Image (cartoon, rainbow over all chains, first blue to last red; front, top):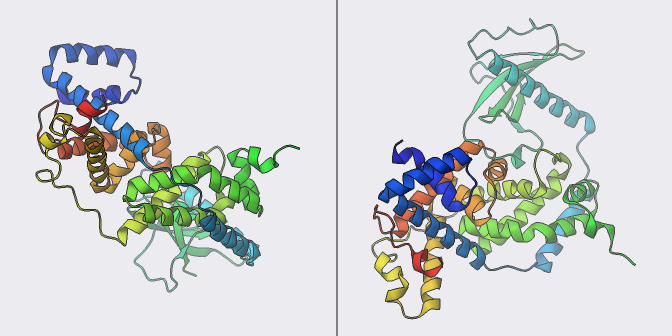
Length: 187
Length: 203
């Protein structure tokens, strides 16, 4: 086995992470016969010790009652503010959930371009890759999306949701993690 | 007379109470987790002042997002660190990054060994400062991994949950980040063991 193949285990061992017994035995055997890796693990151990020291040396800041007071004022203001209409929130949440389901469905067929056309499912909704940006409305960030990890790339997916007045079309912006971030209504 | 219930409530219950408008629960959550969030923010951005701002913004986000916290999917601490992480990224985007420590001028390995500095405390402080600067100068994805796994001692699984990535991703980022730190602190040398600041001070 080459040295570079063992580096991840070597680093883990230096950090005190438990390895599988077989991997630990293999690494121990390698370290006995490889001066370079034996020296490398000493460097990694020194790095771990230095980082532990840095963690300890970070000054412990005490609770700032003034800052807490500002936060409590923000808390009170939020509690006093009128909440958005429940029906609108419910619609957006349902749209988000529907989009997530459709994304999973899309992934399960491998995105081969043979996603069922709109309306062919006959059940809750259907999806297809969004056509070029021709919708008039702007994207609206979904509730909670700003608390999600920042997405690095995403995809816009058009969904259709049945409603009493007919289907509603919307574009859903989905991050690389499969979570819906924003929506805009097309119709 | 016992303590108010909020002081004994588990984190998940505190969040539920916050979502229901309980300001005492919010204050307790703040007191309970502020230190961890502040340490994380300080390690990420290298500025105590900026870290305080990030803590504030993170807890403001808690006010607005408490109802969307889902127990069982993560822990409150990891959820808070994830929020702080997003705010730290935004904060950094608006500010110049801390310049990389110059390996040739400031972190000469020969100057970082204790033998060359008779005043141990000064040397140790210099070493810690050099390491702190090197951590802050790491690219963000590697810095997050180092801060969460090595400075906060989170498991790979917990760090991955806080960041929202795969366990293998966090592991490889940590290893890469440590290699970058070692290279920086060893003055670009590639042989091992290199004269890390910590080699003789902390081991």
